[in-house]
Image (tube, rainbow, N blue to C red):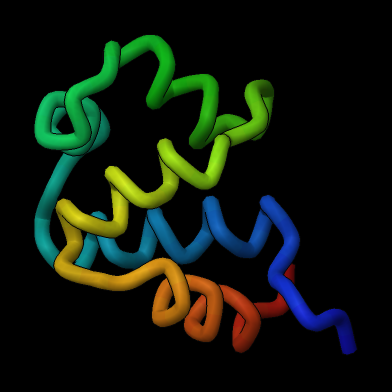
Length: 77
């Protein structure tokens, strides 16, 4: 098993957190202070997310990066 989650696992966990909180993509982008088009590319996997960007998203969810990684690693990507 890898010591860190794949990008696909992270994106899947972000989507799970969005559903849990009833947050759509545009709202997540706004709360994360990024363009909706950028968020779309991240969630489609067509753009690689930086740790800084993931940190902003985690803040919206009230999660630390470590918690997001732990949750994502439990997923089958």
